[in-house]
Image: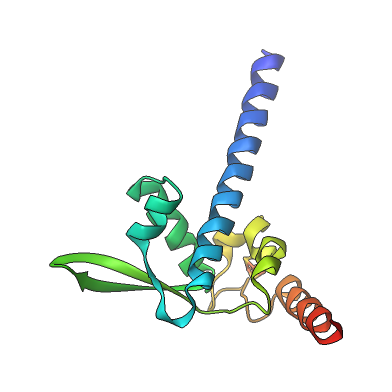
Amino acid sequence: MVTEVSHSKKSSESEEYEDMDLTSKVYKLVVEHGKDGILQSLIWKDLSLTSRDGSRLAIRLEKRGMVKRERILESGRWTYKLTPLRLPVQIDSIEQAPCVTCKVEEKCSPLGVISPYTCNLLSGWVLEEYTRKSSS
Ligand code: SF4
């Protein structure tokens, strides 16, 4: 019984890690396409994601205020284009972004009690990146 519990805890931890890793990869691809944005279907293809899993990750990034999801008509079909709302100083710094591993991201929203506007972790990261960029 104990083994089952620790096993299920371990697999949920590894699923959580995998999820965070994929969220980070989706965000990285969106940022790489800059202000022009990228069709979400191209990201799903690139990362071999199902549209269900990919949409879940995109919605998560949208809720965090990191990307904009815009419904557009492309070749006669409705889809979404993703564009970054926050552009990091350097793309390689995305992996360090606190939002990617945040434990309270479900509760974080621009108008919520927990918000990117008042988040010390986020402002600390931005400041650190800015300092790093300025001194290099
Ligand atoms: S609480 Fe801070 S670190 Fe967490 S998702 Fe919101 S802005 Fe990001």
